[in-house]
Image (cartoon, rainbow, N blue to C red; front, side, top):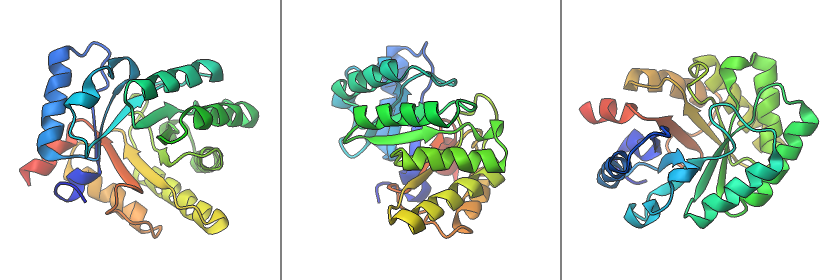
Length: 230
């Protein structure tokens, strides 16, 4: 595992469309120094970042709208393909709550085809779900080919301990049924190591590993400072 402990699980994020070139360079500098799993920016900010980023770190972007997702599968596919051409290794996309099964599956199919060979992380916006609908959304995402189910953007509510458990339980169920082990990404309002440990406890209670960046990611912009201070 790269880096030290939890830092090696981080997706270090800068999700600000007004971010300057200097802001992006600062993000790259911090990432290259501390070696998180990935950095994550908007897709239109990707150009040139891969050349500056340590090759051990994945380059991720959000595509298809953020914090609200798109219902336009064609536009999503085109954005994902453009991100791939700009050096992206990973795609984060929002599966907008309330879309319905058919539209959700169509969007997932388009995203998975466009992102073939890339890691696909699907944001469910769990603060807008109850337990049943959150786990249903996670099931749609996993059956549609998501590599990770991600709790939320943080723009419409924070990740709860309960939601972390729901996602981990659905990932475990998917593994039992299909034999495919997928991942959980915890994000939204995670600012301190205490916040993080409470969420990780919910994941481990469902029997999932919290030490491998192939199966657990932590999306945060301010958590790194807390982890470095320990």
